[in-house]
Image (tube, rainbow, N blue to C red; front, top):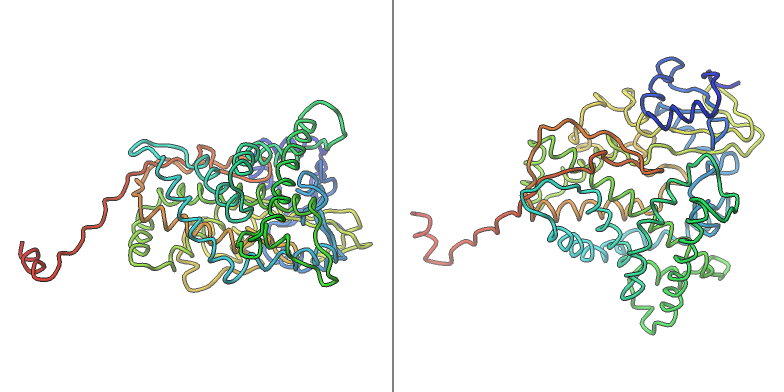
Length: 444
């Protein structure tokens, strides 16, 4: 009834996974096929998928049959986070939160993204190699604080100070083999202290927003969540809003920052593509830019596992029947390298997306089904705006250095060397001469 797999102790499997995840899963795939069983803390009995066909089936499974994998980010983001909700309550929350992240609403955030990208880039050293990951973490946090939370003044400063540690520690604890047991010492105790400090700031920010006489005129997501109503007329509590804001802050800025770092790690190793992108951006186009972002997310996904837990008595998955309590993990990086879904999957080739958008069953950097990331459109727009702004203002030197390895930040993956680049300010464009001077200038 279950796929084949190794008979090794869970802690041995965990150690192999931590030391070299991609090599470990690759070896199991080679021996047992594209689907195999495994026992590994903190997830317990797991079925791992590395192909697009069964992943499509998994993501289309009804929520009453399979819910969120456990543990997930809900254990650090709080019970009010979308990650912690199941079934109809989860779908109800998604419907409430969807409007700020789609359509015309998104375009209201573009000026903030351009401004923050320009502000961050102004601090970069010219002609000196530096790590982009820390720079993009600062940038994406600033964008979310302004566009999503509408934070200013002390609220902005406090959250900018708190969130890097909250996000990094929370991400590592989510997949820790030992979950929170309430002890007054250790990493979980430190996270609880940070979380209390975050709640104090976030709840005060929410209370301040509620008192804002111009709340109806604000475009930030927080203002919209405060005013949003469920179908029955009820609203989210302040603590639920605080949990959702932490979800957007923690899950949102880390993943986008790491993807941007991977983008420059890839582009500086593909100079012809970089030249084509600069030419397109200068001409006002974005087709290749969009395709490049899709391909970065395919070839270097920052979230490499999405999964479900069987809630029904059993769940059909291909030729197998999984019992209640089993978990299913789709290894995103392997699924997105499935040769049955992508031609020459090991090549970095954005042109594959010029004539066709990604398939939702094989291109899954934001997850899929009813639990697909609600902020996906915001993140895609943010990456496009930031990349366009930087390519317009900066020249990035090509490199012959080896590809950067994958480095784990707990839940997400980032370039091991920080996505290092060497950048130079681009010269200001020369203005065309006016009227009769044009002919004289042309003759020279």
